[in-house]
Amino acid sequence: MSMIKDEGLYPSGERKIEWVKRNCPLLRNLEESFAIEKPFAGKKIALSIHLEAKTAYLCKVLASGGAEMFITGSNPLSTQDDVAAALVKAGLNVYAWHGATDEEYYSHIRAVLENNCNIIIDDGGDLVHMLHTEMQDKVQYVIGGCEETTTGIVRLKAMLNEGKLKFPMIMVNDADCKHLFDNRYGTGQSVWDGINRTTNLIVAGKIVVVAGYGWCGKGVSMRAKALGARVIITEIDPIKAIEAVMDGFEVMPMAKAAKVGDFFVTVTGCAGVIDEEDFMQMKEGAILANAGHFDVEIDMKKLREISVSADEMRNNIMGYTLPNGKHVYVLAEGRLVNLAAGDGHPAEIMDMSFAIQALSARYLVKNENNISDLLIKVPREVDMDVAHMKLRFLGKEIDSLTKEQEEYLNNSNV
Image (cartoon, rainbow, N blue to C red; front, side, top):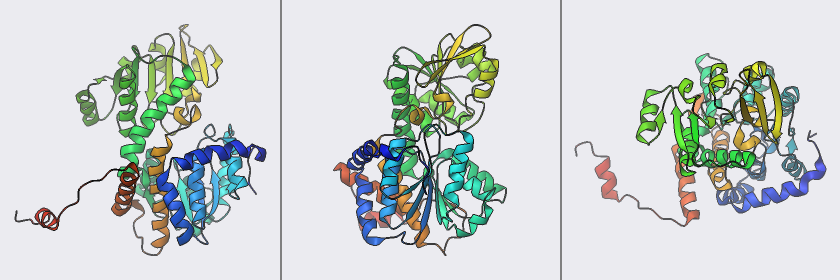
């Protein structure tokens, strides 16, 4: 039995999903082929990804392949209740609602995993973590899983290094068609969609501090620059710092950047990136947003402790009065700003990412008894198939190697 806020909200959810479907040609193609092939017949899939319309369409695509779906969100503020209702109306099992408390959020994850699922599709690692801690008796039913995001892969690598990982996981985030496009162009656009719609303030002429210059940080910085901002990068990796300099950005420690920034965006996957000392150095009216998976990059606990007062300024903006009398403003409680204060990545971008997810899940089923590694790269042929499909739907053509060229490239005596 599903656990959602209001089943009567389904009409607007259905419209959102239909709009996504119209703009996701790769997933439409997979939905048609899966409906014939039925690769997931008899299988149960547990899925925890931000529960909005693009995720919902992925769920329907997997269901078209015969999967029995058990779905929850991966962030309490990114679940859209009308979308959840639309999935339930379509016969899928959903356990999530917007604004869930921590207790409710984890009860939803437990409810999903109680169903003895065979494939785990995770975003951030909460399903996998609970399977390895509280619900180890359910591991016996798992063939393997797929991880959507950088943070989840960091957690998986830690589990592997500690000898705790009990079933194979495909690192979907590391596929070229995921990190090159989703992380850079998807995050780059959706973060500023969330910030702009929430603040209604101009970015041009402001100083934007981006913490982290990985693929997501590159996208956020690129879009900030395009909006007319002066961009500062903070980093711990000297190679990425040099890259940021050569891309035309200023680089400095957060302790210095805190004094001059107007907007701050954290994109690191680490905790405590902006801390008490940084808060106290900030200019009046500094705006803080997080684009990393968990709400730990901005030290919200410490900010709440030291603040003289906290007031809701407008929807998704909390203003904190610091002991020095200055004010800082935090968007979406320090959670993922592009989803907690927006609609997430554009549909065309998630079309590629979720095509990788769907094909990776099919790969696990097809190779159920032939997988020995616990952390698996997305098979190159899957990445290439998705790229070729995307090019075809874009109406673009590329060259291919002749037989002579292949021989030349493979000849060590050249």
